[in-house]
Length: 526
Image (cartoon, rainbow, N blue to C red):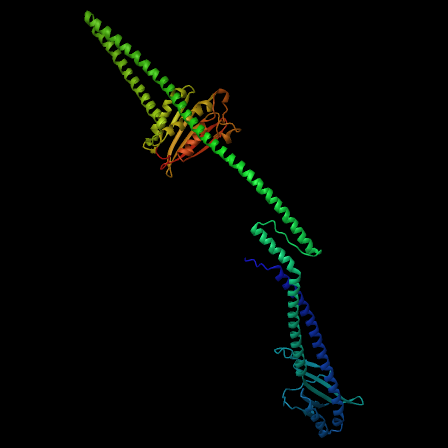
């Protein structure tokens, strides 16, 4: 709804005119209605007097049945144009004599008890016809009735003239009031409007050195004095504010430079921490692979010694001619079984070294390539096998074997490694139950969903809300840095442009839901 804004001068004029108009209308209304009532009553009373006089003159003619005399009396009414009809009735209701210049045929209704004023409401101030019935008496003997019909045009004309004069008077008075209101508003509001104009100019130009003057000690003079005081205070405050703003601006610029330097240092420190975590993970990977390879290689050396020993014994017996068929069969069975065990052991060691080689290269280079995500995560778990078997933890990986994603395997490896380390160090620390880790991988709405879950002791409620913040750990006295989940969070959000959700319940377990876009899921290839 549009708001109509009027100036105070216009409002004052309109208010003055409105109040004056109401007063004029009320006074004029009561004056006019009073005049109407007075003229109406006066007309009726005069008409009654006229009817009674006419009845007095006509009664003798009716008594003596002097029709010529009655007619002569009625003819004298021609000088009164307002009289429309006069009828003299005898006691039998018959017309004795009649004056009817307008030849009115309407039947006269005689009612001696009332005076009837038949109004014509369709015409303004027209009261129509006045009907009067007067008894014709002589010595208290009633001989008949005088019926008089008289037009009210004379009072209608008078009242219309009065109405026009009232309207004219009201209009002239309103014009006079309008002129007076303009004069008074200019006289009274001029200093206030001048002050308002000066205030607008000061607000526009910000020139708080401006002062106003008004030579009077009335309320407006006090207003001017207060305005000057306010402007002076504003000028002082503005000057002080500008000085404070300059000082604060310099301080802010200094703080901004310091913050930028701190941000750069923080980014560098964060990058160093990530690289340090990478190297730490790579060191753990080397340690784990070395431990894992050591067992199959030891078995291979043992098997090789057995084969060598059996082969030498077989050659010696053959050269000495003491070789029996049964002995040869027994030694060949041992050599065959040992060589088969040796082959499986070497293949297992070869697989471990191949996984170590690929994952270690991925963690260092961060190259982007297509991987079968299930196989790759299985390789990551394989490199952590020696640590998982110490818990021990049962690992379950569910995914489509053909599910392929183009990403940086090193980032995926670092994320899964940190989650595994988090489960081992925190989830299964002093764990008494059957430890389980499950990974469920699926493609949904052009996103790769990785759900990592363990059934460990869960995360304490005190740190659950800030578990992804840096340096938050419950193992600080045991060598924990509190950077593992922070690095996981940053890698998923910043590197892979994905999202990470976590739910955890104490003594039930912890679940991480990783969502990675299948397309453009990583930063630009370096």
